[in-house]
Length: 358
Image (cartoon, rainbow, N blue to C red; front, side, top):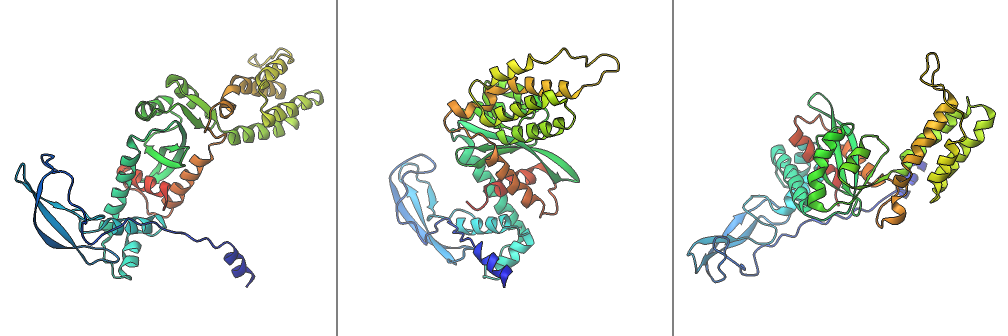
């Protein structure tokens, strides 16, 4: 009973907003799809059988253009040439997003009297991905999150680069790109930057992103979560081997990073000048703990401006958590499928899973 009580305390209500579907079109067409004419004659109508949770058929009117004399169908809201309604296609895609296989989604829908084959559901998921891409293709975005992931596909782990709109937290696109290759990342991001008007990218502290941001003339906000994690771990390890007189310096570096003062880079540079000359690189002289501390301080000072872009750029988060959350959805769904067979299927599956049921 205790476990059930805990489970009940975590209950969450989810409301799904499905596309609207009408039995017939209430308004006349605005223009001819062939010539753009605006004068029509109604040219009869026909009952169209559809696959939908509520409707078995709809009524479609046909019109004749008075300019070009061609006839065309004027479909109701939520209806097109396909047998499935927009609502039915959304339900099919949602079942897959919730973790069902294509066969499982087919069985689930058939229990409610909606018969769809697994291949029809597969096509619905692909169409949903293409729709998402179209919706975001020309939508202006100023701040994006960029991060890499590795997903199982066609027999091995494949590299994926994910780009997320930091304003909405939704994926813009995914690419078959290794984030460790700066040239590949630049080629992938460059058309996005030009088309969407991107000016800021939020990334982790991977070295390959710095030359990409410089080449594309973007502001780069380095995720504070990643920086603080590796600095905290490095300071913890160094304190075990540093001479006692340098432990305070290591702790001060850690504190500067937590506070992020505007003059932090100047303080770090001043600290780096206190170190004695290094003998690293000479024969028989490995990198000492003091040398490692100085190297860390210099690295932080060089990238200080990239840690604080959120201070002067509105709408820039100080972490890359929205991108991490999207990637988490993608990976969670990827683990429940048998494996993607090609990039087209993987890209569609990741895009749909990254958006979720929003």
